Amino acid sequence: MRNVYLIFRRDYLGYVRAWGFWLSLAAVPLFMIIGGTFAMFAAKSSPVRYYAVVEPAAVYADAIESEFALNDEDASQQARDLAANMDLSPQQHAALQSGNAAPPRKFIRVPAPADSIDDLRPYLMGQRLVSGPLGDKPLFAVFIPSADGKDLEYWSDDVNVGALRATAANAMRRLARQQALSEAGLGPDFLDRVDSNALQVSAHRIRTVADQTTAGSEVTMADRAPVFVAGGLAYFLWLMIFSIIQYLLMGTIEERSNKIFDTLLTSVKLTELLAGKLLAVFAVTSTMMVSWGLFAFGASLFATSQIPGGASLLSPFLAAFANPSIIIPGLISFLLGYVMYGMIFMALGSLCDTIQEAQTLLSPMMILLMLPMFAIFIAFQDPGSPIIDIASWIPVFTPFLLILRMPHDPPLWEIVAQMLIMALTALAILWLATKVYRAGAVHGAGIGDLGGVFKRMFKGKAG
Image (tube, rainbow, N blue to C red; front, side):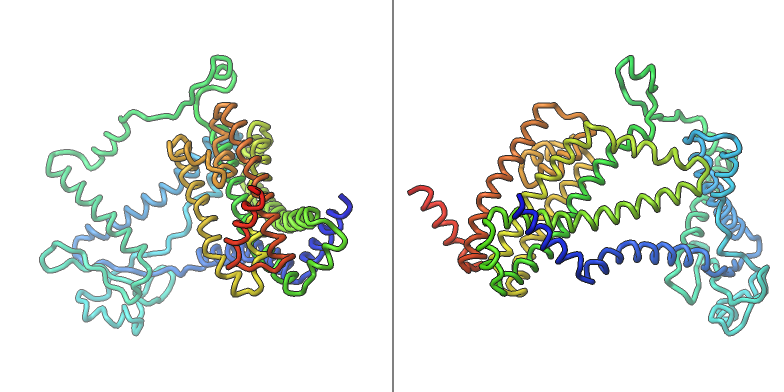
């Protein structure tokens, strides 16, 4: 164990002492902060734009303004729905709703300064300004009915901002429905009254009588949180495995080219060398993932602290993460999956002398890693899919899919059997990877010699 520790300490300190490691560690939260700040700044600093509608009766203009008002009401309703699903006092409800009010309007209607597109051209191109509530500004866009009355033409010099046009399109559809209702002798609120009388489809979860008496039957975030936690853990495993490729490949290539293996193997056994290296890379990636996880958790705490009663949003996820029936199988799958993939990458890296040779291995490695990602996506959408049931018995998918299946209470015999398959596969990969690693790192075998390595390996075992 002492030799394993020495190899582990040597490699781990070699990674974490490099400035590139700390740059990579700081890059993700730094980019998240910069990206979030930039997005908030962009949203708040987006300019207020003037638009006009050329028509005598203001029918289209009023419809567009009504659509903006409905959008604002929808935003306020979402805040009220969020408050209703949280255990808050009346004062906290009011604070939450006021804090989530609709953002300031970004498009303001002004009177059209002219009636034809030719006369409006200098206003739309910024050569002349129009007066409005915020002073004189260029005219951002104008709506003009077509000559045949079948189209509401949208004219603007900026073709990339489509929010105003999309709002107008929704307004025209709503206006057409209202006109059709009026022609049928029905009021404009007829469809709203019909919708309000529709039966609400509420979600309920079947439980035992005892559980339903204490927890109720309505589906809450506490019911959904285990799925999100399991999905996060599965993705965390995938991201960690994805991150170890560069460390295992680059580190192995450097030591092979510098003949460091020969020196190390005079003092330690090959199994101790592999164990120490695998633990070192695991510790390096764990350091990165834990740091990023703590940052995300701190950011979540800060975000929820800005919402009255926001702590109740995190409690279901913390409870799900502390659930032994989820976290224990999840951690076992996590460790076995890491060993399987880590040894595969380490063995393949031992066959490379140059970065160019390693790059030829990246494509099959990426394919190998993308397959579990597709499976994770399918399992998250439909964990009961027959494809997921079959794939969960395939060792390269089992670590990820078993984690995702745990919130759905799979049979105990399946959990035990799949863990046993993972353990046996990990042992087989360890045995094969050790042989390949010895051939590559010690005897100098290359990628082209891999077939011969396996042939001699199994031929010698058969003999």
